[in-house]
Image (cartoon, rainbow, N blue to C red; front, side, top):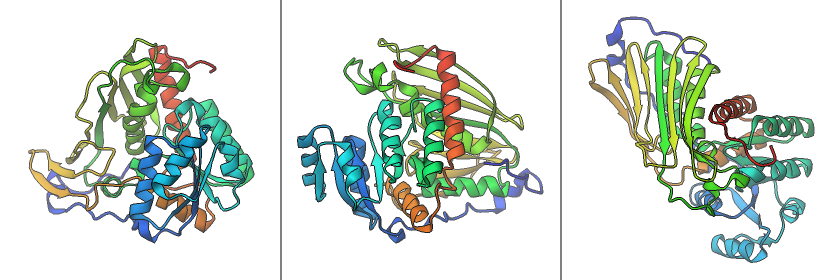
Length: 356
């Protein structure tokens, strides 16, 4: 996101201006598409439930390497077709777009297969294991002329549109510091995907991608990045603390960990005022505008806190219906910038995945 212009007037300028209302369209108004789901795990279940509850989207097929797992998922959500392979989902001519919900290690191959089959694609975050894979997917989608988007659901939520408008208006003055964290306590278990190097596990791609992507949205391209951290017992990244700077000299202070449950909050501090986003900042959350004197000037409280994954699906549907090949809210070049930052963080931590 470009740096906002600085608002005119003294620091008290923010006191007389309420937070804007979100401009986010209702997910139920998005043109309905026929969706196929690849890899019916936990996040896929949340996604399909959000679509069924809050949109007019239709899930018509689900695929898994385990036919029984696909059938159980289809029965649970009333999906017409259950397949024992991903290729069968792509061959189903009813499918307009596929949602890829597999571990990070599989995103590249599965998304590329879908793109080559001419299907539009929504890929769970983190987009791929690394920037090289992201570059190849983006190039393939542009050559094939299909829609491709990272399912970074935070970018599409109403409270983040409030944040965008505040930044665009200059209400905070000159942004100087961004802070964000995402930590969850995970029991050490070598069988869990977050501790599995072969599945591109670790804190960064699953949890840390949220604060890194948030900082990128607020600050724009990073001018510098430094990270320190600690590996988990399997060699994946267990914890990382990251400092980034913007081209204007603002700082971002970010943290992610598998070793503790952190507040999962975010804040943007400017010369006039600051925004605080309650935990979990990456989900539908309350936003507060706070003066330099620590007075709460205004608050935005989300009307809907459940089913937030519906907003990314609605954005994808609107783009596809309009013939757009990427989203203005989560452009592919922005996804690529975030992936390059994640690569740089892993280099600082000395973490690589098998096969890279």
